[in-house]
Image 1 (cartoon, rainbow, N blue to C red):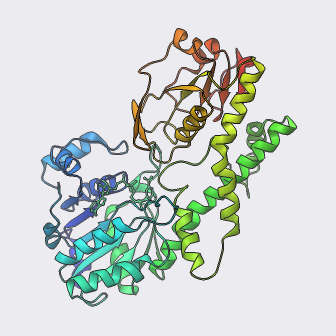
Image 2 (cartoon, rainbow, N blue to C red; image 1 turned 30 degrees about the horizontal axis):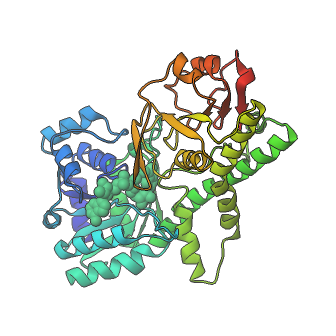
Amino acid sequence: MKEYLLKKICDKSIAVGVIGLGYVGLPLAVEKAKAGFKTIGFDIQKARAEMVNKGQNYIGDVVAEDLQEIVNSGMLSATCDFSFIKDVDFIAICVPTPLNEYKQPDISYVESSAKEISKYLTKNTIVVLESTTYPGTTEELICPILEEGSGLVCGEDFYLGFSPERVDPGNLVYKTKNTPKVVGGVGKEATEVIAAMYRQVLESDIMEVSSPAVAEMEKILENTYRNINIALVNELAMLCDKMNINIWEVIEAAKTKPYGFQAFYPGPGLGGHCIPLDPYYLSWKARKYDFHISLLEASAMVNDKMPEYCVERAGKILNRHKKALNGSRVLMVGVAYKKDIDDYRESPALKVSEEFQKNGAIVDFYDPYIPSYKYKEKIYHGLKTIDEAVVGSYDIVVITTNHTAVDYEMIAKNAKAIFDTKNAMADIVENREHIELL
Ligand SMILES: NC(=O)c1ccc[n+]([C@@H]2O[C@H](COP(=O)([O-])OP(=O)(O)OC[C@H]3O[C@@H](n4cnc5c(N)ncnc54)[C@H](O)[C@@H]3O)[C@@H](O)[C@H]2O)c1
């Protein structure tokens, strides 16, 4: 099987299937097709499959012309019909791995896609899980589902492995194609074949590790590292406020050390589909071993408190203007979880807004990338634009995302009070007296 697949990888006769056409899956499908591999995308959302088949892009990191070109040339198509799995030789699973309401892993998407694959899995196929998950998922959960459903044997009839996705939406330097990748297969041969496949598609280094569990754990280490370091700067931001020290200046100063320090920045809380969620996959699994990751608990306590803390700080600013939170008009600028993207999943801004409303404030928002958002089953519509009169009509402007395409100079000139939780207005020199930083 190994020689057969390596030859097919080499002559690019491998057909690729990508399961889940979201932020991770669509860019991956585009790269595979661009590299010369005929690719089929699978999604349970009919609308997504239809858009892909029309060459219509809906993911920021995908170049619309690239998508159009590979769809027109027949290299990429999409479907909701999983029976086409039998036509592909390499399958990458890129489905969501969220948490349930009790912050426990919801592995149901991974499970159901594996069940669908198992129905149509044929001999000499490679299956790779790319979704972030707890160590053990590939071997303990996916492998038995695939073997039972297909009647095939892992390592003999098909190869299985884990290769974490590292896509960083909005990153202008590192994209799917040039971000180094880690591969851990069930068995040495699987690792070798999966790595060979990625080497054909990507420009980046591919590191082979000894097992899927190592690859699963290293991905969670990456995200846990960010989660904990963000908590550290958030906690220091709270202390610095009490000590009248500018945390942003502190971080800039620390950054001058050329080794041993990486800058993280405070903000209104954690956001996105990765950093706030993935560490819980690890703490859930750790409990099986009577192990509690105390640093994660501590960081969750700090990070989860940030939206409430930001509203308290805004309340203090209003107080200085002889205003109460109750009844004040608040303009929140930015609901995306990070700058220059349209993704608001887990965005702390939604919690900040909720907290303001709980305290009786009237909140409107403006985000150049997000005209409306859904939170707890309710739809919130934003302002289409902001100008001098609009900004001046609010009691306070709270900056919750540091988008580039916002006229901060105009905000500084016209707002009665500003609470900047992202240091988005760092370059504003004039009219700073109304700006308070987190
Ligand atoms: N977004 C990121 O920045 C990022 C970065 C690194 C890793 N990840 C990880 O990658 C995985 C996917 O994340 P995403 O952001 O692309 O999610 P997403 O929600 O953008 O996309 C997931 C897609 O999978 C589809 N889907 C759900 N169940 C399916 C099924 N059974 N069969 C086929 N399709 C199905 C959904 O309809 C959706 O289109 C997650 O595990 C995430 O943690 C995400």
